[in-house]
Image (cartoon, rainbow, N blue to C red; front, side, top):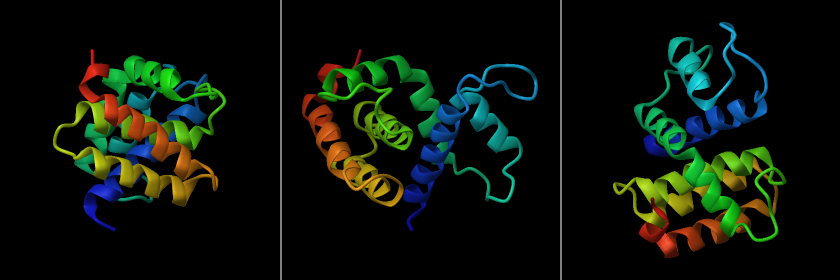
Length: 147
């Protein structure tokens, strides 16, 4: 698996974990957020290898633009609220949307393909098509969605 693909997977893992732990607190009593989970993984990677730099960039980018990313996803995910989506799909879509809208170093087609691949590996049978369609729509509108 290429390094950037592994980094994307780790970023999705962190975003997913934060989503699953939402409403709980960290060991120092602060609410669990993607930033706090990232900080934990950077300090204590556990059995995993160190968090790749690109995974850090993704998580920090998603954190910086969460409100807009979620607004875009809610607007274009016809018939699906963010809360109704499987948590892993939310994590994949947040990552993919950040790459499409905010990371000019990654071609939109690559970002979408990587997100679809993760959806195939990690989610339901219908998730790859959903992720592909939603991210393709976001990519089509591109810079018009960035505030």
